[in-house]
Every structure is written in structure tokens, then in C-alpha cells.
Length: 152
Image (cartoon, rainbow, N blue to C red; front, side, top):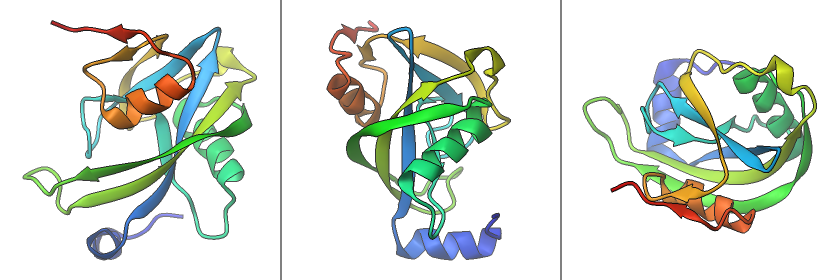
């Protein structure tokens, strides 16, 4: 279900958005996608998106995994609940406040992986990085990805 832009802006101005972020884990590594849209354009992030009204967390996670990565995934469990706030800028038309339910997911068909049009790169990581947002590093740490990659 697509929400028309004017209505979505009204929602963003008044309420936080409930999302799932997906820790898709394969061979001891977690998938990060490079965002090609705001907020956090150009940053590596978990696959994720909005939960629809009356949609369960598990069903949202399975749906979004398929939409964003073309992967059929098994839902394993909730890892954490994170929160992000992005302030309005020239490229972000409204302040964005999300509550993110981070879910561990296991892919069942890794060979079909491909990212969607809202991402332009990906990587499989086995450690945190000081270049990642805290909403990425915290769930990674809870999954046992405790080493930190230092970039300069």
C-alpha cells in the first residue's frame, strides 16, 4: 500500500513511524544495504521498512526481506528496539522519527539475492564499524558482532 506524499508528510510531522530492521544473517555475517534515498542516504543500513496496520512484526519482516533483497527468509526473533531521529534538511522534507524493531532473519535462498531500487550497494559484515549509526552497531553487538572496525 502506497501512501500519497502529502498524507505521508502529515504523518511524519505528527507521529513516529513503526518499522522493522532486518538482521539477515548468513554464514556468520550480517547483510547491510547502502541506502540510495533519504533519510541516511549513502549509509549502510539493515534492510527494513514500515509495518502496515494489522500486519504482524513477523509478517512485515518476511515481506520486507523479499521486497528489498529478493530473499525468502525465516523469522527467528526480535533482537532489540532502536530509535532514529533525522532532522529536516534540504534533502529531507520533514523531521523523521522511527521506532525500529530489529529482527534476526535467516535466508533460505541466498542465490536469489538482489537489492531493490532504493539501494545501490551491499556488504556482508562480521563486525561493527565506527562509520555505522548506533542503531546499526547496537543490534550487531547484541548478535555477538563485538569487534569494531576502525576507519581512520
